[in-house]
Image 1 (tube, rainbow, N blue to C red):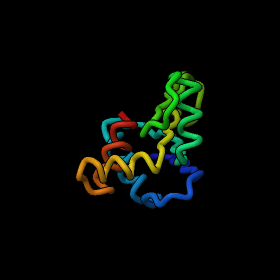
Image 2: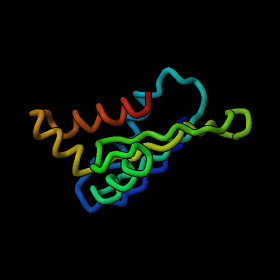
Image 3: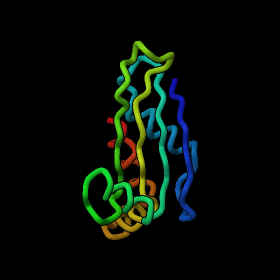
Amino acid sequence: MLELDLQIASETSAPDEARFRLWCEMGLRQRSADSELTIRLVDENEGRELNHTWRHKNYATNVLSFPADVPDDMLDIPLLGDLVICVPVVNREAAEQGKSVDAHWAHMVIHGCL
């Protein structure tokens, strides 16, 4: 079972928690064990700050992944890590690429879980 912590720090429209859970479960279906994952949805300012801090790039990117660095045997449920997704960037990319917003979100979340 997936324990999902969805943190919404963006005022821009994003998919609901049920979709995030579905996409994460699809991306993690090869894992047989329970897992914990945090997804934080951010606006461009926070996305830019995090990308600058961790990647030294001064722009907001679509997804940043932060894998957990804790041995699984030290936790009750293996902590996979955190995904930070910049909502305006993902929505804009979907439009620029001629994709449905849901399809692009699914791609970003599943890829981030891998």
